[in-house]
Every structure is written in C-alpha cells, then in structure tokens.
Image (tube, rainbow, N blue to C red; front, side, top):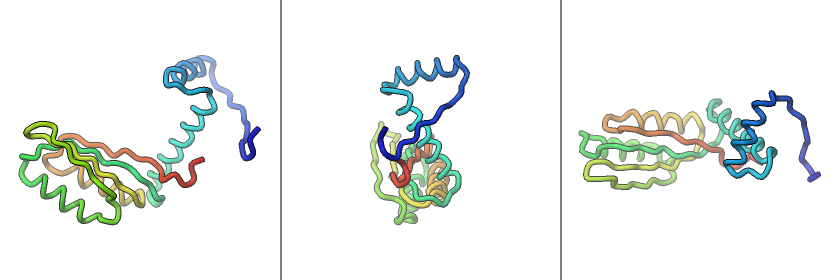
Length: 140
C-alpha cells in the first residue's frame, strides 16, 4: 500500500453498488477507488464554495443577445469592476445576434458567486452557468 493511503470499508445496498459499478465502468474508471476519490474531491470543492471564504477557481459561461440594450457595455463594465478575480475571457460569435462568453475567475468563493450572480442576471443574458472547481490546493 502506498504511503499516506488509508483503506476503509463502506456498507451500501447491493443494488446501489451494482448501479455505481455500471456507471463508473461506462465513464471509464479503472476501479471503485478512483471513482470514490473523484466523488470525495467534488464534495470538498462544493463545500468550499458553499462556505464562501476558500480560494477557488471557475468559469462563468453566458449566452447573450448582443442586440439587447446595454448588455455588452454592462458585461464589460462589470468585468472591469472585478479585475482581481477575472483572469481571462473568451468571446465567440454564435450567429448574427447571439454571443457566447466564458469568463475565467479565481478568488474567494463568496466574491466569485457575487460576480456570477451579477453577470448572469443582466438583461439580455439568455442563459448562463457558474462552474466551479478548487485551485488544486488541498485536493490529493
């Protein structure tokens, strides 16, 4: 056994384990341990985002109509307001009216959620989503 690795047992209903094994096989996991480690990491990242004071990273993806009133100006103004947290952005023209923008963010979880809420609530943003991850620190 590798140093720093702990082996533990878990009791689950047989049907749950069978479904889990089928899904992790479809996803390409080599074994249960790898899948469980990923699930644990995801649980930790989600908790850190909920707490609000951990250093996190993520993306804010938005689809918007660039013809809509002031949406382009407001998007740019908001991005300039958060220079410390916004690392980069990518802009894609989907068609003659719609644009896709992906904003890469890093900072305190509460601040990142604030940025996402403000961007995604702008008039003209048709759909959007905040996708979160950790910064890699604390994830083994």
